[in-house]
Length: 224
Image (cartoon, rainbow, N blue to C red; front, side, top):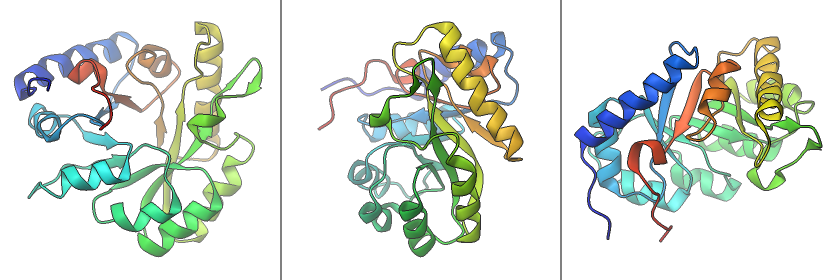
């Protein structure tokens, strides 16, 4: 079992992440600490270290950890979400970052009326739309989905994307830039893109929020 991580360790690493963001030209970029597969100690340490929010990917893991907290931090759900899991996590989640289809938006409107959501889009690259296993809709399908979320009474605040796997810097920058332009054209506030390995590219293209795990907590333990 890995040793518990401390708030001091996370604070030092968070400062390094914020320095990377600053060097990349970012200002007021939110850092979501991705605590998936880490224990409750990581959540507590992230909050004490001053992370803006935590991000969780798995419904049952999220509930099992956060149900143990008297005071919980702002929570972003950043994994692919099955409609039948919405009811389980609704009491704990503040922002749903992975809305990629109308059926999920409808279930969120039923179980979490007025919830803040991000529409997840697939980052385009030179070969078109790829990485379908990561979830997300095409850039073309995002505007009507944003409209549908609003009509259902949800609050669409932005777009989220996961960078293309194995793409070079030029391709990745172009993909992130396309997502940022769509955020602007839709008049949205949040552009959630960039993780530990590609946050500089994302920030350079206008990300307002990065999702960082390993840079804060070290190597991720296997999911139990």
